[in-house]
Image 1 (cartoon, rainbow, N blue to C red):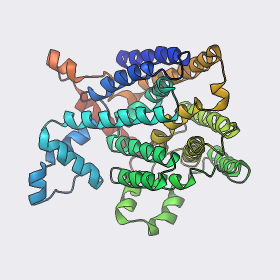
Image 2 (image 1 turned 90 degrees about the horizontal axis):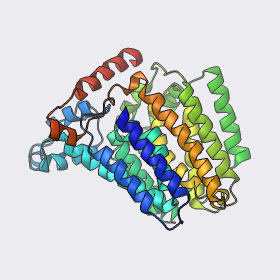
Image 3 (image 1 turned 30 degrees about the vertical axis):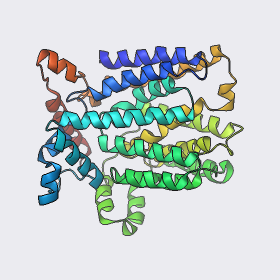
Length: 393
């Protein structure tokens, strides 16, 4: 657990320093990027996804064989572009570590660059993202991580009034993870802020009622959508149909409260209707809240929305007029509060049973120096066994 807390603590200090730095200073953000990049790119057999993707990678042929003989259908359903990413990496390296390194480099650098286009508070963004989303995204679902980074790039293009390019990039993201289709409409909504009175308030109130009554609408939505969806999409939705719902935990409640607070701040900003970056942030925050409230028992759904929404939301927080006009002391006080809550969220996860594949953290450097490969794959498969027993269809 110490490596995770150490990284979070370093990001916390950098975020506090950055809050008082000149707006044009990006040194602290670059340091934060290097810390997160080293942590993510050098991980070894740590995380939910490692054992599964390592097994699939072993069956993937290099590009010459793939072109001549084709590629056998992987046991784990994977989108075409992600399969071909495996093929390309396999052409140059037989070790699956190379795949995870490539994905980490692309995903982390993309998030950093996107957040930098929104505001200068990259250290705060990394602090919150690392504590709340880095482990389930960058160290658990690398297909979703790649897709989320591409979606973020597409949204930046849209916010810069290049919606066609933005749509094209998000369409590419769909080739890495089908869930990216949920974001295809956002480039078209970049200049249209949702109505609080006629859209946000009614649907969020309905969502709160569903949450309080324990109503889950996943089955209804799948029933309505399935006839209009391609077969492979319906196949991916099948595991969520009539499944066992996860309990609504205190941590999830805190996330929902945080998103509601961010939504209020975003909607109250004087540029909420004119700034495409803030407009998109409002839509993203609304989407993640809808997923939380209506699909509270399916963290696999709202987590994937949060992979995109969280870095954008936090970067936009520092873009708000009210935040920009604050003094250094107040900015650091807000950073201190947000950072403390984020650290609590990280610790909450690390002491839960779900942390089994993550603790202890192992790095490539550690393996090189000691020759100790640890028991990462065993811990990963052990968690999958527990998950299937508790959440089987």
